[in-house]
Image: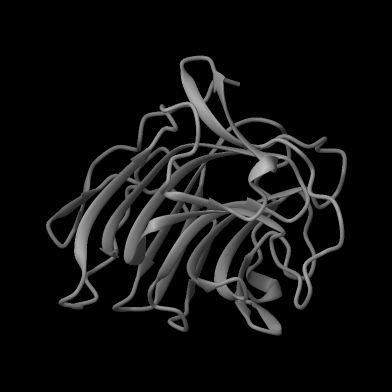
Length: 240
């Protein structure tokens, strides 16, 4: 299946900033005077991750060509002991240049591990304070506790932010590219996730409200699967 790389439909206003992640009302300003508006486009065109990225295990990550694009790949399955403490993504690439408040994120995501293996995943992290305090969107081919949902990691515990009755169906069950959008609005606490939303009026994959970690870094990662990421677009409020 050929991936549709163009962003969806009409542009959205984010306090004067154009947001093109999805065709729904964009997040509002937090009102923080220290924040600035930024637009980050990461296509990994340099052929290797730049100094804006920090990796838990650099040797597991590579930038490789695919067609006309460069993609960031977690090429080797994580090995060794699991991370101590609460279960959370074991491998990740953190975008370190900014901490983001209200933002709109769009990224192409692909799970490269055999989809017949239950629980293979790719994760989008945001609001990251440190290694044990952050949110993550868990995109998996299986449904279970803290699986295929949005999770908040709070030190020695984690919370599934979607109640069982509101859990979406698994969205990434193959080895194809999928467009994933995350909108965060600090003013209302709204967090909205879309998967393969290309048309105006698309239904969210997940919706919730939580304001525990208002500002933080964005990261890409996985628990224990090979995954690829491409064409990362982040627009919104940021602090260096």
